[in-house]
Image 1 (cartoon, rainbow, N blue to C red):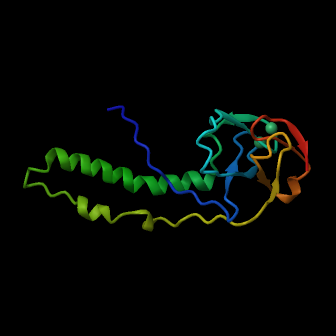
Image 2 (tube, protein in one colour):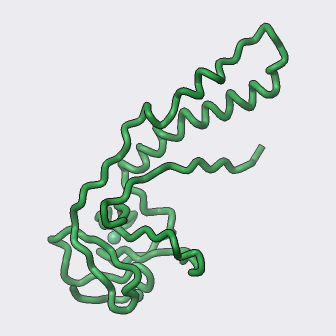
Image 3 (cartoon, rainbow, N blue to C red):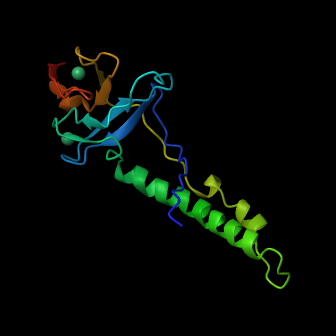
Length: 154
Ligand SMILES: [Zn+2]
Ligand SMILES: [Zn+2]
């Protein structure tokens, strides 16, 4: 069974709609804007770190907290899927009691939701003003565009 199971994990944005990210190269943190209405745009296959300018795959930017959260959030759901799959296969055997109903109650409530503070300052690259980022105040100065890696000053 090499079916890919994807579990949507709700990662919180700050009140401006920015999601915290961590660069896999310099481990610096910044935020990028989450937009829902860009279905017409072709998603890029990589982003440039605004802090060090090194590009990485679009899925490489999770912070450690987000990865830990995703693991603890997804684990009970994966367990539930397995139990349900096993339950489907053996559900007719009366001697075996599957506690799928019980496990349904194990949900995101058991995991403390991440909280995203409203920190950092917005920087808007002149080459791609629709892709603003937020960077820590002390990192303001020369930044790289998320989309094209172009240098700009803020
Ligand atoms: Zn970086
Ligand atoms: Zn750009």
